[in-house]
Image 1 (cartoon, rainbow, N blue to C red):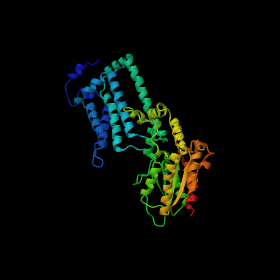
Image 2: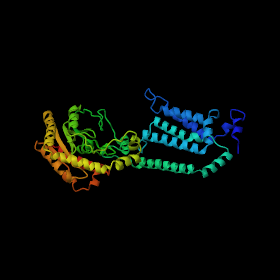
Image 3: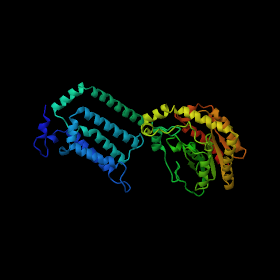
Length: 446
């Protein structure tokens, strides 16, 4: 076995024993990755350094310190101790890769930005740097013998296998399970938004820019997540776009809607919209009265301090937190829906809400604009929401407003054929198409 003291007292030269005691391929790869990390993160973007700049700088330092003989003594010391080297490499790689995954949210359909790619190169430098220094054949044989006898090595093997399996599962989820959820709380949903929530116009609505075109009749769809196309990968599948295609040339349909809006926010958006429409379509869902009440205590609770990464960073842990530790999204949704529907039986709440609904009628009348109300039932329990939808529809019809109530049409259809997915009870593309087609003759009529 080579004596470490002999190595330390060997004659110094540009390519001395310390340089030769390296894996040349790993050395080259580590240097290239360090340079790539620096080039991608240390170049200013729009006049300032990206927030990943620290990762690029750290990668350059690690790559240089591990690859050049005169300064890589700490790495050679670590490499001579296989258990310590394995622990450091595993912990550093898991931490770096985990931080990059949570920060960059790499998913199918979203290409990482240049600084994010640079940060990934920095992660690879962290993983490779401990192994650039190469032990001699005799040292390698001794290290293998020690590892074979070590109980700690067996634990490290289990931990390494678990880490590999975890990130492999995460990669599969991020490739095939980028999907929305009804409450917009999971990491999967945020990744879905990053890929599919577009286009966003200057008014911050998921819609094209509104343009005043002479001779074109304008329809403005006002609503919440249903109108905004929550859960739809393409906005062209939303009922507003189906309506526009059905109306044909000479019509333009714009959208003023955001997830979470209720009647008060919808009315404010209508008043502030920069272009006056010829037709207003109010998309009404049976939770639009919720602005009159405080937030429910049984809604999903934010993760406690220190657990944000667990609940919001990875797809797998996010699902575990929101669907297991929180008791299941379906349970929360059922409680939420029952409370929202019960509000329609409260005379005082309904009186206040009806007065707010009348403001839409008054505004449309004052501006000489046609008002059409699209009433959505609860899609995963249509019959259970019939009392609420009939009450809203009757209120508007009594004031001479055209109403398209989807309750009767959707009631015979199984809920699984109406909603986006098991975790998202918003309408799917087929349900949006039904709504848009129902609206066409009503909107087009004089």
